[in-house]
Length: 165
Image 1 (cartoon, helix red, strand yellow):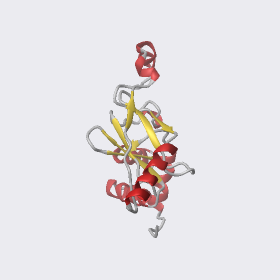
Image 2 (image 1 turned 180 degrees about the vertical axis):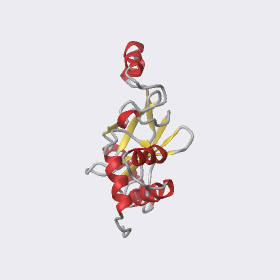
Image 3 (image 1 turned 90 degrees about the horizontal axis):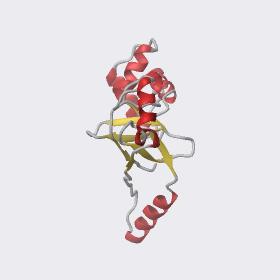
């Protein structure tokens, strides 16, 4: 895109790449500080905005509209199925959605069409109370991402906002 790569932006992307699931800017900021960094929350937000603009991160929204981030895979734009209980996310095949959005754009004469796909459910671990109890005993609590880095809390329900680049 044209934004320069700064030391802070590299640090944000490095720490974000270590997260296995979506993470809020606030949680990412806490991870950066715990990693010995000296970076302000405003700088984290700015870096995430730039990374989103150049297609380096995927963004989803939590149940109150907060933005959560994760590095975008090399394959590009993705859609996710999110667990409404623990926040676990899983990329899903969405070729049919992409084809449909392209066809709608072509049929209507619109350009630069973006789309939003929201897929939420309850994962297998959360559907089975015994598995859920084992997970909570291991240190994860409801409303946190069990796949998050070192138990870093994230927020509960999520909806995926997907914008192709």
